[in-house]
Image (tube, rainbow, N blue to C red):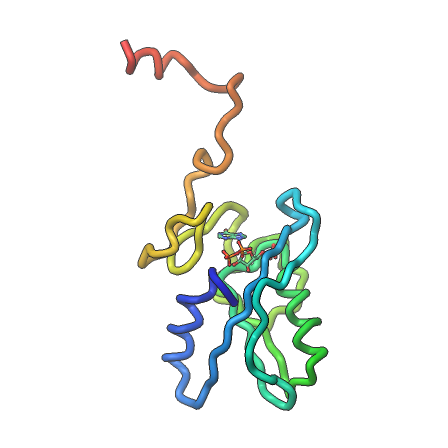
Length: 154
Ligand SMILES: O=P(O)(O)OC[C@H]1O[C@H](OP(=O)(O)OP(=O)(O)O)[C@H](O)[C@@H]1O
């Protein structure tokens, strides 16, 4: 999976002591959990025929589970010998979905680094981190304590 899974896919492949073939799929999900439409768009298809093959789909984070469910249905329809899903991180909204391999269950929020981005940034961090909530959910103007800010600017 592109792009968030690139780093974990390569590291996982290097840790497997068997022949593997890597191919990439580009998906954009408009997860219903983030106020989106719940639609998935295929941006780039794989260039391998997976019929009769053992397929492991790797993704960096499973958030609403929309992408994982769509991919499993789509690729299962191509007649693989077996198909499983591996997610480095899984958020609470996707716990009900049957995923074979989950690295870490994480709370809601935004995880960045090790391939995962926030608005295109942080993918190149060597570690993973939780983004501070004020970066993606700025407090409403009503709740801002201006006294501290005023103190700093005086
Ligand atoms: O479980 P879901 O709600 O469907 O969300 C998970 C998907 O969202 C992210 O991809 P994104 O669309 O941000 O693209 P990216 O891989 O290029 O970062 C992530 O890498 C998953 O593929």
